[in-house]
Length: 156
Image (tube, rainbow, N blue to C red; front, side, top):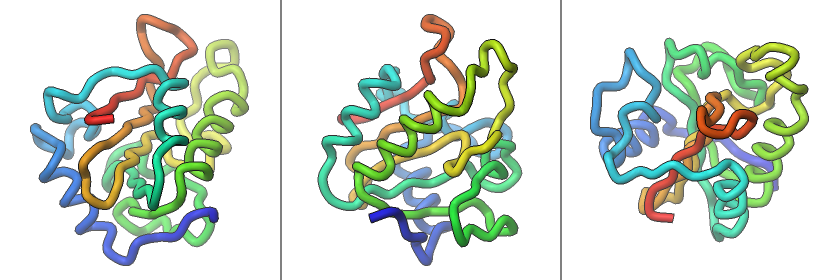
C-alpha cells in the first residue's frame, strides 16, 4: 500500500485538534500547542513505534497558512486545499519518514531548506482512527541532539 486521501480532511483535522490540541491553532504549529502529556521521543524511536503499529494509520499536515503545509508533493494532492488528511499502513509511512529525514542531504552543512525535495509535508501528525495515540514528526531538530528530528508522542 502507499496512501490514499481521506474525503473529509477538515473533519479529521478538527477531530485531532479537539482531542489533542490545548491551545489556539493559527499563529503556531499544532505541535507547539499539544496536550500537556505529549512527551518528547527520539526520531528513531518514533519511527520504530510507528512501524510496529497495526491497521490503518491516518496522517495529516499543518493547516492552511502554515509554511510547513505548503511543502507537500504527494501525488494527486491539490495545492489549493487547506492541508490534507490521508491514510496508509505503518510500513509505508515509517519508510517515507526515515528516507526523507536521512536522505535529503546534510542540512546542517548545506543549510536548512524547509520542504526541499520532500514528498511528505515538513510536519507530519500520525495517529489511528480512534485518536487514542499520536506521533508527531516536526521539521525541527532536537536542540539537545543536533541532527535528530524533534518528535512528540502520546499514549504510545
